[in-house]
Length: 147
Image (cartoon, rainbow, N blue to C red; front, side, top):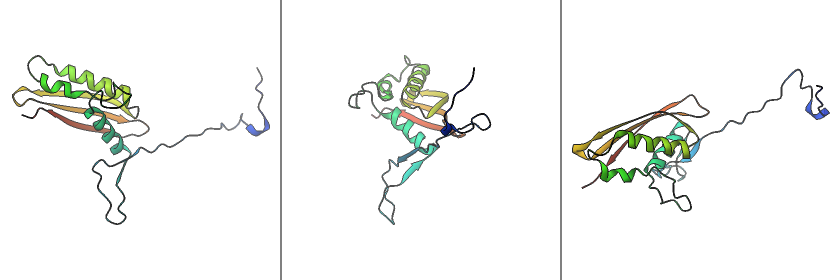
């Protein structure tokens, strides 16, 4: 079968035409610290931006984002369940579902949850790869109930 190309395509049989778009992950720093010289807010880039985004996603309560009732980790629901009836796999599953559904820049590698019943806390360690990068990020969160 013969291929028909226009003259604008050039000689496609010898050298393929390929393009790639380099995407830079950028976000504003949530500490909102101003630069002393200009007064602008600092930016976070690359893996730090994705790490900050994953943390904000997991710490957002479900139903708090307008028009997106399932956006957020909803980890606050586990705060009053940190007793013997809660399994670490419950929190792990919620973290996995949330990141896979709402953060396309992160490829989840591992989630580990340690529940400390005596202190009403759960430690969550999330390991993920940043898409389009070779960086592996480890994020540690503590879910704690205040008294």
